[in-house]
Length: 412
Image 1: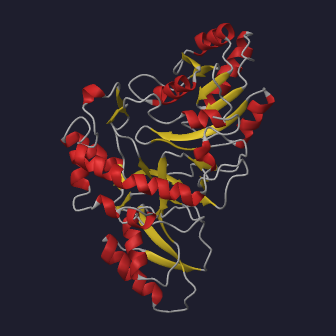
Image 2: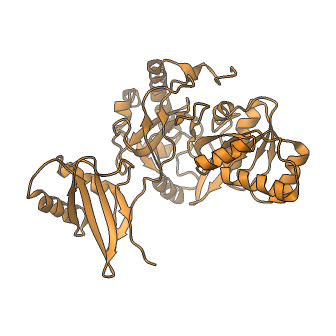
Image 3: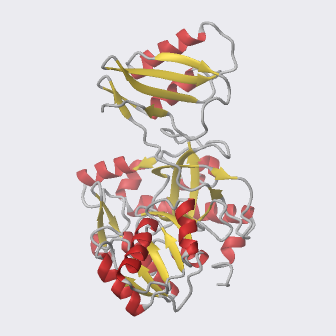
């Protein structure tokens, strides 16, 4: 560990990183299939030795949380996707859904220490952690990471703002973990009560976006705040660095950006769903679809880290909606795109007219074909089982935001 970088992994040659990650992936897939019957079923017929490149990985099915929830309901507690017995997990959690997760038995099970280091946390710091500790793993994700770094942690959790302000004044933490909004609440409460919270000078936030305006306000109050992006299922995915140019992907995962509703990787710069593969021995995840949207940024970070960078959280990819009693899924829009390769980006806009649902498929195309509208409309009816209008727009007219279905109905 250096003052600048957590370890040498962060400055590896990108080709070296790819070779090492995919060299380890074959053994990880074999481990998952051998130790977790859910993965053996999900990946039935897959030869682990053949999954040694991004192209090969992209051929595997994406595994979404909704499917994990269903499998856990059928086969509690973990649906067969944990590679450890519940009693060996250390801690067992329930996240909203509900969905259940084992912690694992390593010192930093969600690999959060790397993000803390990038945010300036160091051994001997006192960390005021306000992520929830009750049933959900949020509090422990940062707690275990900080302890692994040699920090002392105040397990504050959520709520009790007046009590927390008292604790801050007495114990003088110099670091904060939690949502950015709650940090502002604590600082404002300290001013209201005449308490001293000036000991906090750095923060790693998560669980909510950190707007530029709030970041500037915190900076004006003497706090340097960076963001992390993690989930209970896969741990740390990416984190901000002092460069403040996107988020750097964690060294312990493989991240792909794919078309929503499919497992197909998008072109660099295009917005798509974040899909993550981990190397956890107790709770392996192979192509786990987070449901979050992001995009890859070109080139390495100015901070010297060489891993892939993403823009951060850009919304949700799960845009499934019901129109006239029928569910419309992004995968169906992708099927329409496959039937009409002359089309570019597609966006299904759902609205209300005369107290009825209506939908219009906006499609980019440079093809001047008078029969194109009718042909695409036929595909909508065939694929979605609901009629929809078609509007051909110029190439580049639709936003590059990953949105495939836009539900604009107003029931007020």
